[in-house]
Length: 307
Image (cartoon, rainbow, N blue to C red; front, side, top):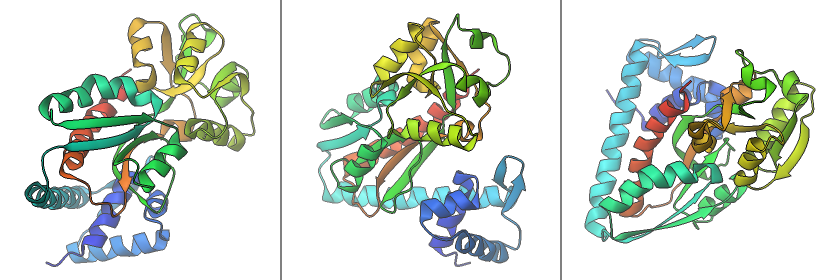
């Protein structure tokens, strides 16, 4: 059976995105085109590949097999590229990464430390930036790899891996909201002083969009471009903030803050992404790091859903 690679790509992106609309946005094509290609796959396989649920699209049993095939085929492609570049390139060099501030602690403490110990000849050049700057650095080839929170569609970026990272209400342990047992409503949040990113930051865009859709306005007490300021403002009782769990992992472990779910679909469905530029020929060292970080993001996703 001859299965066109592009159809498999459309199917895999649809499953990973959770909806045809989101998949179409990532692929920069019409949703009808995605649906048509998946329908052709279903005809070829003689079985439906996707089913709708209240939480979005998910693969059927045959769809799971097809998804496993996509991943195995992708692994074979990556393995071929790895062996080819190993023949053409040296096992040394520099990898440039540009990452959101919230990733720094987890990224250095776990995957980068392990990678650096295994590949001592490779130098890591790490820059910190906001979402727009991360995309710009990757698209303009100033960075091999970008790690960012909150998706922004761009025709020249490839999503290597994504990890569900709900945006949570981060409160001091003695804050009245800390005693809530149900997800916090946007109405409750709008009545509470908040420490937020400056306008234009990726997380701030997500926050503003959610409040506008709800017909509400956040009560901004502190506005900053610093993750450290956000964390400290919460601990000091100056307000609550909205961040993914990984961004306050140390404070949660220390018991100085609590992280509460918010009753908002955009917040609950937010993700962290690892990106590269479409068409860029990655050096051998960068491909190794991409696979290494991809495995870390799977564990990262599981850790982010701890109670």
